[in-house]
Length: 478
Image (cartoon, rainbow, N blue to C red; front, side, top):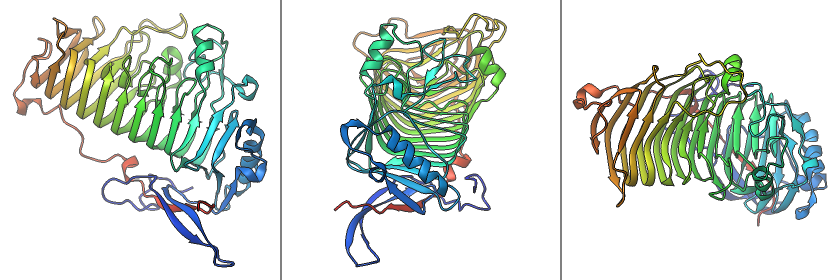
């Protein structure tokens, strides 16, 4: 498999590459010259073989279970993994299904009028062992249900469409969770583990039982053009959670969530420390977030493998609790460092800046109280916010302050009834330049030229230079 990061094998194009452009075109059948509609779209790789879920007995009536049809289709198409790859087409309809596993060198393509409906029959959700970097399920002490779309140890996987929909039908799961009726962690919509070269693009995800997109222990990942919608009171419906991943790009996404829109993670306390796989080289750009009770981007709180080199830019927050929030606590260990944020626009916020070293929430009582996380080199610049209740809540760890915090060119407009204390700062160290309202004394004003640490890297990460191909799905559209 050709690696995305190999400049000798893949063409690196100048400027940003947008994956997932969908074009409706006319294709010609080579046998009798008949024309029929097809879709052309950009992807990391095209496929030589294609089938429809209907070819394997799939029924898109919203009532018939298609779990076995998806399993049979993917099992059949897996034989082409090293013979040009394969593509499974999901046509218009409502396709009820439980969890199913993907294969390598494979594309799952959803028509714009296709809806994958997640089954509400728990028997259609296999049970998995807890993630090794968590030591237990995220909701429970036991294991977890497999995600609706799942894959492990894969290479070259595309999950895309013409903005087709994946509906997790999460209401049943939310009620069971709130009532304490679950002994296993709720399923996610998409989870890819121990894999490389992953594209998830041009889809609408709604009503996930829990997290929506969870790449974990993986590398070379693009999540682009995704719309995620969940009720604002739905529990733990995080949008996109890169977890112990390297070289990831999240861009052009619109997320309405009951939790963090993007949550960057890398394992939980002693389990994450022992597993030792950080999240690093992460790009997040052109994200729009609505989440009144959570953050646009959260770093942690499960960050025990470390988080480093996160670059977020052109972020819009609307009616969101906080912008970029750092969450950690004693027992997490490791670090969050080299974080760069620029060009954020915020409308109606509880806090603009929020960091806490007192988040709590441990998997068990066996964590190491001497595992103190290091938070350093955190840079924010070019931020405008309006209708804000409180500028900042910055709480480091007593005796182990968060250091290297830099704020530059920040203008915060307050609500009609703001908090009297605008900057609540404890156990932090840093500087500021051209920030309104005036920051706390722990962020002393510096001349602009002296706040050069508030920079944003101008070099490109490997994931930003991915060359894509124009692919097609030769299925009737007209």
